[in-house]
Amino acid sequence: MHNRFQHILVGFLIIVTIASCKGLQKETIIYRNDFEGGNLSRIIDGKIEEYNGSKVIGRYSQSGFLLKLDSLPKHNMVQISFDLYIHDTWDGNAIKPEGPDIWIMNIDGWSAVYSTFANGLCTNCSQAFPVVQPSHVNGGFVFFDNKPNSNAIKTDLPGACKLKDSKEGTSMYKILRTFEHTESTLDIGCYAQLEDPDTANKNCNESWSVDNMMVKVIEFK
Ligand SMILES: [Ca+2]
Ligand SMILES: [Ca+2]
Image 1: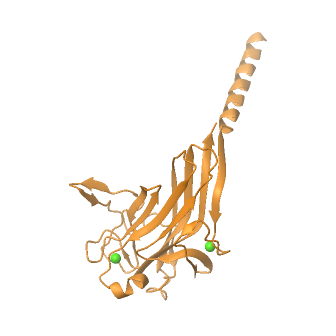
Image 2: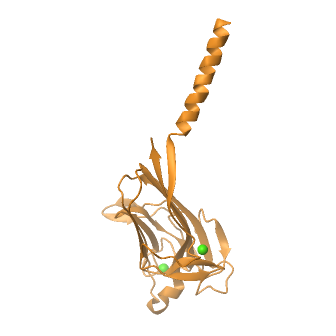
Image 3: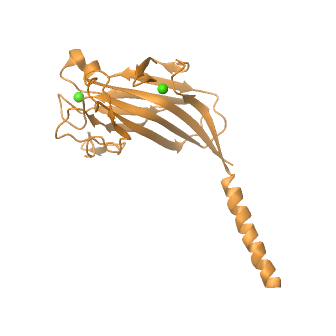
C-alpha cells in the first residue's frame, strides 16, 4: 500500500507541475486592427483602401507605414501577426531593372523581415520568402531561391490594379514573428523596396497591403 501511495503521489505531483508550467505564460493582446472602422491612430503614413470586400491598410508601393505603440505592459516577448497581400506583378529575385522586389518589416529599427516576393506575370522567377533574411556575401545581399508564391495562403485573389481583371493577380501570406522584447515602446515599420523600369505606372504594377494586424505581448512569470 505504501508503494502504491507513493506512485499516486508522484503522478499527482507531475500533473500539478505540468499544469503550473502552462500557467507561467501570460499573453495580452495590445493591438488589433482589421481596418474596417478606419482606425489609423498610432500609425504614421496610414491610409485605407477597400480590397476584395475588406478594408486594408494600403495600398503602398515603394513606401509604407509605421505603427508606434507605447505603455506596453511588462513582458518578455512580442508576437506580431497579420495578412500580407502582394498585389500584381512582383519580380522576386530578378536583377535590375525589374528586381529585386523586397518587402520589409523593421522592429524598433532592426530587420525582422527583409525578403523578396514574386507574383503575377513573372516567368523564370524566384522569391526568397519564407526565408525572411538574405545571406551576406562579399558585402552584398544574396536572397534564397524559392518558387514564386512559396508559402502563400491564397494565390487565387484578384489583382488590385495592373492585374485587376485577373483571378490570380494577388497572393496572400500570413506573417508571424515572435521575438524577445522588454521595452515599454514598440515601433513596427512596414515598407517595400521595389524596382520597376516603368516608373510612371509603378504604383499600379507592384503594390502591397496589410490586414488583420495583431500584436501580443507575452510574459513569463
Ligand atoms: Ca479588413
Ligand atoms: Ca519589379
